Image (cartoon, rainbow, N blue to C red):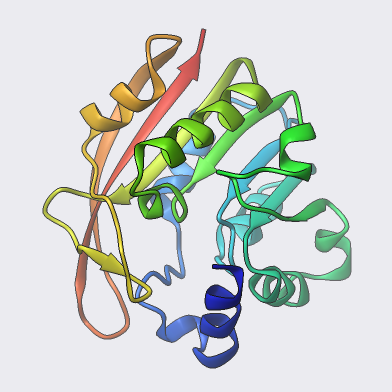
Length: 205
């Protein structure tokens, strides 16, 4: 799978990918409402070459972790950032459902995922994802999840995906994560296609 995504990022300009979002305003608003300290650990799962961490660092947060299965994608993101901004990011090439280095993390204040979870079609993969999440997110920490809504696209990057609702996110996370809010958000990509998403923000007990 890493080779698949490496090839996607080598051959497709970021701005022409179906998931590209120049201004991740919904994620940033949800992040801001978590009330984190500027030195809290923020983990972006499936970071790819997205612009989320660009904005996070511009807001003054100083400790970020970018995780993606594609080394090529992370290299694109790292190159785009300034040297100073890049030095504030820990770069990890890993599969969240089969974690290596990722599984050694702890004290994560925010787990943000707009890109990875919906590719996990098998129940066992989602269980492994949750095992990793529970192992690294601290008590009182936050989780922001986003995926194509039930009315949204059925494929992404040429691969089938699992659509979500806020209730499905809550069922996945379980009782030790309190659902704070859900947000329906539709953005229009550069090709003019509308992409309905659902976002949800949780806090761990």
